[in-house]
Length: 336
Ligand code: KG4
Ligand code: ZN
Image (cartoon, rainbow, N blue to C red):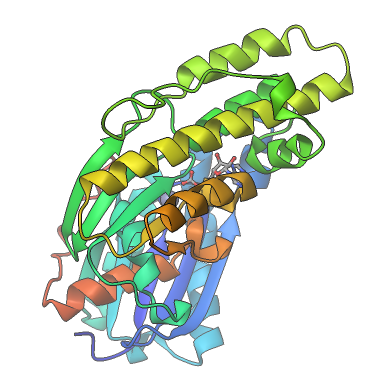
């Protein structure tokens, strides 16, 4: 176990984040700096710009959380930094910074898998609902879309993944077709609120199919075809609502199949930016309820990329006596 507070660092995509947790998991300080402004005019994350922004902002963010927690680097007990999967430039910045601090302060270093950090978030004591192993995780973000049986720390069974786009990517691409700014998920949800899904029926890829893989490219193509025929504002809203309804139905169907594949599951956990979508949450809550299980959705700030989850994953691993060498190289691809 860590003998002092653990610093977590996240830099795998377009959020630069730092957090400090007490060894028992209490959150002492946390900060996230989003790079939305830097990437917005490109309509997506530009890796080189992301890496430079992490480099420019990480040192001040780490200083900020230390100050917020009333600590100096010498008071820390360990450093945990996201070391993959993700954009290599950003990973190199965050992991190197963490390893440098670990070396300078003679602290244990944990190279955290970003997906594992999302997966272990529901066990954060701050959430007040200690979710017991095994549980089923639906990771629904812009970069990841998978269904994982979480059996224990370091023990994950990937039951399904996307055959093409991640679900957040599908939201973003469909939003773009509807003329909404990037990242389109939240804007599409707002537009869908004034639409009627029944007036824009769309395909539901893989619905009813065995297993719990996902596919969204066909749905996006169908949105593109309908978007070309839009004649009024109501059509746009209907199409947004139709898209969201199709996604929610598919996710619910996939979750139902996954629960059947994972006996003994104690909870259905949803994480990632798309977990912010109320339509998606409602659909998944119904699936969980039908299975007699709770739907656990961490608060949005802990669903999207953050460093609290990274520090927590570090604590979970340190408790098992696991740590990594400062020679650990960041891995752009790193399946659970
Ligand atoms: O987990 P996240 O913040 O970052 C990563 O992709 O790792 O997820 C961002 C994704 C984007 O695709 C965004 O459009 C989507 O989550 N998103 C939403 C909503 N809020 C964020 N999608 C649908 N409805 C929302 N309310
Ligand atoms: Zn993430």
